[in-house]
Length: 144
Image (cartoon, rainbow, N blue to C red; front, side, top):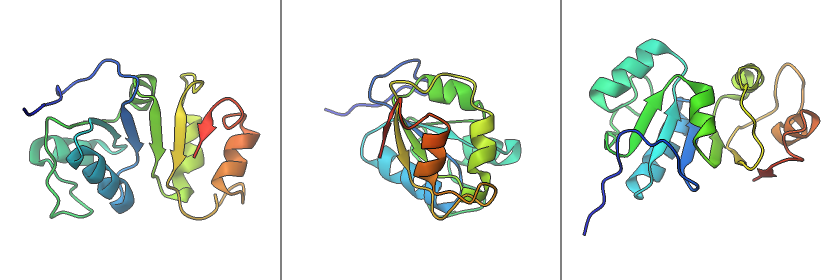
């Protein structure tokens, strides 16, 4: 028996959101989706988003990887993606993480936040975990 996820998922208690569309985020989306999970994929730039929706591959990173369109929902609506997923995988470059968090307007309580961010945040000079704790995100959530 095979299962095919719908192209749009409205709610799921164990669904994944990958935030970012660089090479690391692209690899994570591929791993999660190839293992039978549906992934909401936050893609910031409109032109990259349009390309992914048409060609089912990232136009800039790991171009040889093709995605199953039934397993991913790429979008540039960050708050919508976060709202409908329990697992939030952070895979943005560290230089953009603070800017990305400034855009989040939805509650992050009861989310499981997994940081795949490498390095320190250049503006605050903090590690990701320290930044999230100072923003009171870590105390309310599970941070892995």
